[in-house]
Length: 138
Image (cartoon, rainbow, N blue to C red; front, side):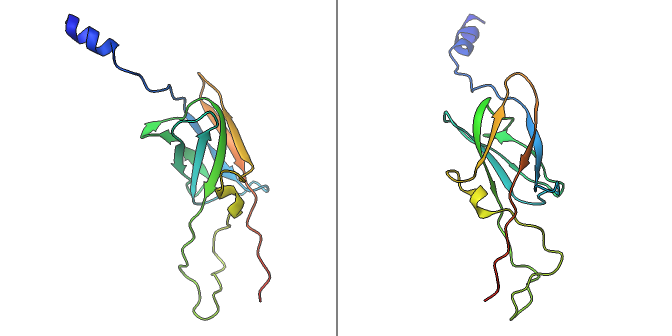
């Protein structure tokens, strides 16, 4: 028994995580319906990530454990678009194509998004992103 207690006392503990959930929305309140959100602690350490569901909701995990470390985070939102349903020769997307997030939000140095994760309390956050603006046809 004494040997086990000594061995357990020498184990290093991972930084404590706090629950972080929330929604990703556009300025008009419409949800971002797909993508991934990532929180990078400004003081360093492993990032926390989550998929974004069809209602814009997310629940962060860090290294496979629920939650994120407390502190100020840089936030990025990444969307990978698949060209399903694009009409041949016109390259037009169907009218039901989901709204897209500005690609600047996918760049850690330029995302313009941040969040404070508070210690010792669940965090339910609202992240508002800029939509991708359409470019004029050539």
